[in-house]
Image (cartoon, rainbow, N blue to C red; front, side, top):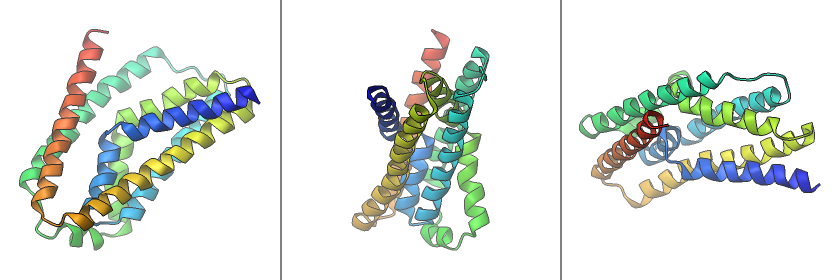
Length: 208
């Protein structure tokens, strides 16, 4: 049982790291709440993606699958490109806000919403690195399937808290601050954060 609790702790700590990390996925959730779009739908789509990836990681962790070291490196460089792309989109959004963006998001079809959200989550190589490759390596370190289940349960619980927490926080911010100019500030800050993350990742990859 001590080892089982250790698996829970690892899943919990990894989930906390995901909450603290302000990457493209979390910024998407936060912005959706601020805009007032399909907040619950977006959070559910992101969480569903996390469930699929983490479940696959647990399965692969109990198999003989051994990802090549080059795959992690490829995903890291791809993540750098993704961060730069999303940073550019954030800066672009500062100057191209729709007048009634919240209304247009509310009128968005489920298919359009899913395409928009899943594009951010699944095309981002960092999603694959952080929610598939890393959890696979951790799951392989546990001795039994029950430990892997405990690990996945803790990680998924924290992932749910992350997804709906960011979306709810964005909604609360929007209920207090209604001036449209604050959305521009949010996009500007998002662009700066993503640019800083890009610089940090590029430095670590170049000097690794």
